[in-house]
Length: 145
Image (cartoon, rainbow, N blue to C red; front, top):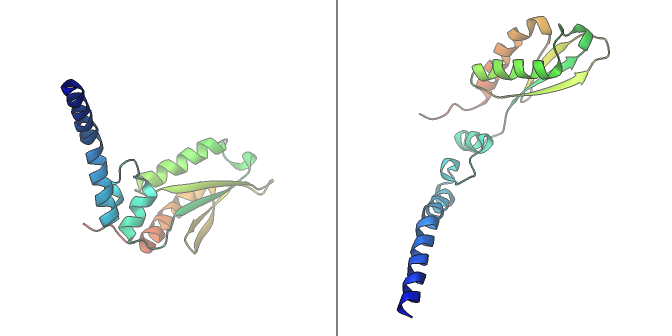
């Protein structure tokens, strides 16, 4: 009987040691609403919302009117990668969307909240990237240091 009590006690101690850090982090999250301490719940969106103080969500959307004949031989996947990397280099995330133009050429329009920047022909799309990032940074509260 004494051996069984010890086994149960040891089992309860192991369970407590496994569960206590998660319970503590969840309690702290519940108290402060800081998503950086929430176990398995950290997302880019929740961190951005926390840094903004719960303000409106702004994102950069690159709308590419795509015509394969006027895309410089680039596929949609390649353009998606190029634009994602260009914005990532500037420290922001972009949502790339495509629409078929049916022969009108390949154009890029950037949407940041209520602002529309462009359209730019694909050859001048880099000019719009800088302007879209500037508009994004003007509309999003900078992180507190």
